[in-house]
Amino acid sequence: MSEGKKRILVIDKDLLAEMVADQLNKYDEFKVFTAGNLGEAVSMIREAKFDLIVVEHFLAYGSAYELLKGESDPRMFYGAPRLIKFVRENLRINPPFVLIGSDPGLLNQSRQKFEIPAERVFLTPYSSFSFEKIVCDILAVECRLADDFIADEMNDHKSRRYFQD
Image (cartoon, rainbow, N blue to C red):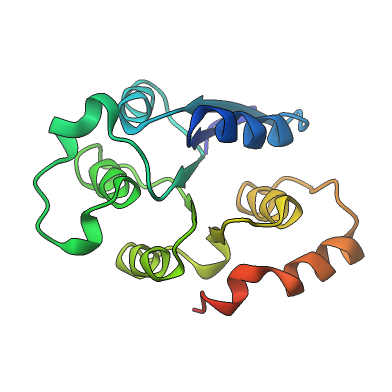
């Protein structure tokens, strides 16, 4: 992990990425960056080290289309799986990833293919409180939410019905 502030990259459509970034920017320990498509994301990942990457499963390729095309595995059709593979194989780094998406079956396939723990997969709409807690846990930062409140949120978290380790 990097020294000082923990660097988080949120990759999603601009407005949604900004909403997530606003939530995490309330922490002095985090520096949050956003990208609206995979082209922007690849450029940013090449330039800087990130401690955590949050990625929407159905992303636009943007300028990364040529870079990320050519997969015959149907699990690799969507943007997030291709980005994870590219980062791990071509850039040879393995930051923790958090997946966000609306299709439980496809999210589960990607989660299993890339060995992403179930608690790092969020089915939309998801609890922003659960998300905040998981990000804090991954980056070893004290969460500002009350423990009893977050315990109830985590137990009720919709994704738990779909994703099990």
